[in-house]
Length: 55
Image (cartoon, rainbow, N blue to C red; front, side, top):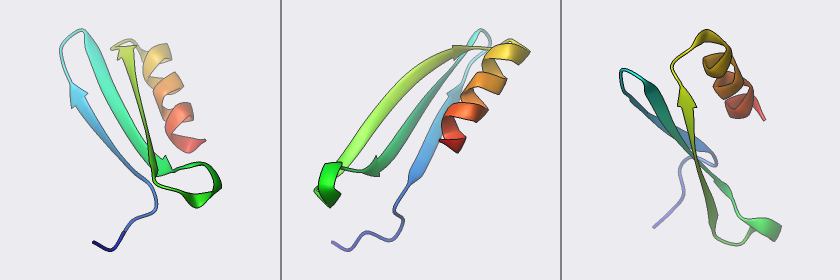
């Protein structure tokens, strides 16, 4: 299967928290790397999530 997007993300939005997952290229271009983090639904935490997505 061909990779169409090098990076992608998904979020699950709940009342009290947001769970976000990011898929990026693996080290040295081998495979894929998946990171999952949970953020509270307060403004500061959502801004931290936006910063994490931007990295």
